[in-house]
Image (cartoon, rainbow, N blue to C red):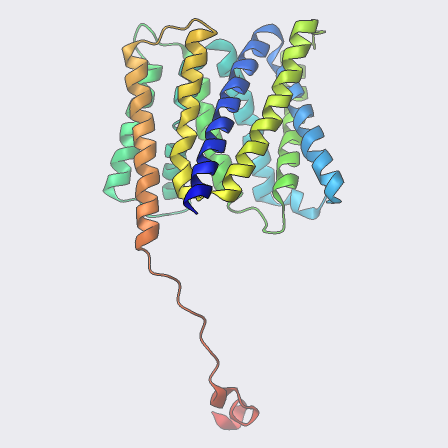
Length: 315
């Protein structure tokens, strides 16, 4: 088990590196093409991948579960959050956007407390508050370095958290492939609607941009496969902190590729966000270990189960 967890952690760290590269590619594409076209490219790639996997496995795409309210809400929030994150990549620094996105688990915990009425003690509440202070330090509203477009990243983090919360209410019969394919289909519809509303027309990409788009699609699929592999062989509670390596990789790419300068306030804010998230993960794992195991199912009483003891006369 220990070797499996170490191997899973290494694979997950590689997946986070791949996803950080995907973030950088999306930022480059968003600077060369209309945002609606970038979203459309990502949606088509996702549909081809997950739809193809469903076709190979013989799984149907259309079922009545797609009309369930939680599924519809999940697809809408996925599409809206995806639009927000691409807008953030297009208009702000990579380091700022990725740092703010690390607050998604904090939004998730807050939403679970407000919507699902899950108990949140003062320790986790303090960690959430500290994490949001870190977000303010990165976004810095009211200060000279404030960029209004950075609020798209905050909106995206909250949107992805809502998506994850709604996923808990999705019908049990829906598989992950169908959910993913449906989300990309919704994103494709949203990208077309966005283009019509904003009057954006797709541009014919140059060979360089077309190559970057193809690379982005391949990177996305690779990251997903690595993520699935890691989560299948490792324990979730031990792997959760590894996800924050995505921020480290993204900051390196921001400095090396995009020549961004990381000021102390951004670094401190990112550290607080990550620290708060790590504490939340650790605290939930600690509580899970302290919960008593579920009671075994009650065995039927052989006397009361007998036919002569189960009718009205037995009462």
